[in-house]
Length: 539
Image (cartoon, rainbow, N blue to C red; front, side, top):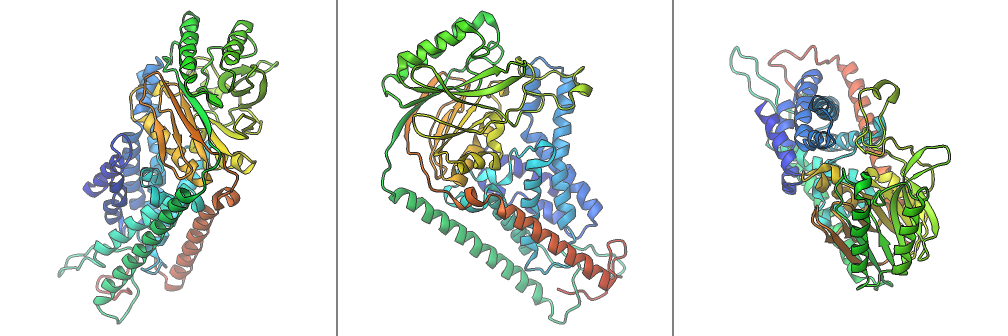
């Protein structure tokens, strides 16, 4: 149990606000040592408990978010614990899948453990609408050379590499078998039930050294690729640069939809727009739902927006709620010309459960309301690519940025820049705004595109195609973030082919598991009937 708790602590410390990213490379070692050689059921329970505690520590802000929305404490805590327990299931599945794995050569086991983790993260991205928050690879967001591999593998490849190192380290320091004293049953402390061999006691050292060596070579290869890719970016001829300005109004989440504050909100954005005049931007980007009302439905609000846009004389991308003729509401991004005319719009497709829509609303709607004061939104269906003064842009709204394939599709359709509009006001001053910012770094690397992120309360920032955060604002301050960007047209391997690496990891795990099942049938081995003590084991 102590080893499992140590893994929990190290995992939490790897992410914001702590950001000790180097701890991620050893965070799972204690957990692997604690579950090595156990029966799958027991390994699952230990992994589940550890995963639940880890996510409870990372997602503590859920309780604060619910309470700030004036939701009951007795609703907030169960939601926090249930989500943590659900995410913990993936840890449990991983430990059950890998502890005591039969049919796997010792050299292959660290690769199996890494592939299993990447597979489970990929499944978590889609199952039950998906929640790929704080993926293990995300912890490396500041380690630019190593995360360049995401341009091929996606973020799942970075997670794979981190787990590979964890598994290799655990394999290297773990003894093959705990020797049994006379009359005392020894405990298995190794990855797989060993097969009979006459190689001798030095065989374990050879295998562990070989595994560590292969892992080190792969790590160096990925690092070398990253250094090469970063150098290519730095040596590229400077493309035509276009100026952008990103607005951060820092409007209180629960004043946004109060009619008493409309004029104050308008005045705030007028002041921010006046600051943009010093750089004369080609495009001005507003945060998610920054306009305090349904755009194109309220004549006064629409005329005000058109007027301030015309005074700037440039294109705008504005986040605002909209409503269809049938009454359905959408969380929308509007691309507007210098005259305030609508050039295109995108309605958010992946809605936040309980934030914008209540799952199973017929069952739960009587007790739970959405946290957003506008009420429930409907999911949009339009293409995320919008026209703008800097060329086609791939727009995503709020936590759509944590879904790699959703962003990739926009770039695949011809976008030269990625734009994220969001509002993290309801997270307050917790770790959540920082955790929410990180996936944008990986979307930049995966697709080789600039990412422009406009956030109501921060973090607002610009991220270059190599994942470097060029500029970023503090949270809960009014700010204008400006910079120059160069739209790109080339496509990375990941943009072209998607999650091939994740599917390859899944296939590898299936093949290894089938091999283990067949071998157990041939040998008659099962976890319920271990070989008697003293029986020679293979290495």
